[in-house]
Length: 241
Figure 1 (tube, rainbow, N blue to C red):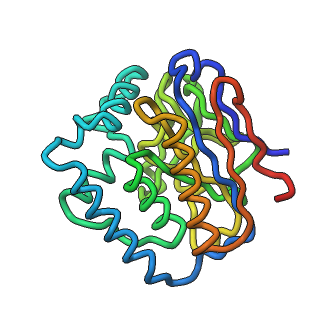
Figure 2 (tube, rainbow, N blue to C red; figure 1 turned 90 degrees about the vertical axis):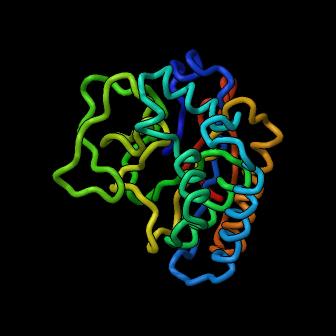
């Protein structure tokens, strides 16, 4: 049985964090879908409109991640959260570059709800996955889009997702590892939607519902969802769907 869990130390440091999870199996991620291009354009324009004149870093849902990053020793100016980075790119350059359906649709949901969203290919994951603080003995991890020789270990104390091999994502949601990335060949995997106040349970439920519905519509397969919090810190990633 493979599980995704949140370490107790994470809830001790961030007691109000919630992690929404979408697990999918039997998906098709290798088809061109023009509807997703139109969706990204709409969500990008709406996100910029909702930001208005508010600087990205000062939006309450971005500021909460900047404060979380500072608390585990990361500089948000140098290592912005995934949602801050996405909003900055959209405000500057328009809709994000198309990748493939799973990434396109989770970017759309991230923009719609102003929350970090990311995912991993379960066929590339080794053992259980845990959201935890990095130790001083982490193996080197090559980040998405970086050359092999650039692989380096997470810094002790930073928040990471990790499996039995090493980090899947560094600085909570800053950058994903190349090893477990979603690709056009991905058929089963999991996506996480991360929420810190002021994002509450209702908004997280809405984002999860949107994400699950989009996967079913554009990628097919079977989908289930769950939420990890201080009272329910573990979810199975492998079980009959």
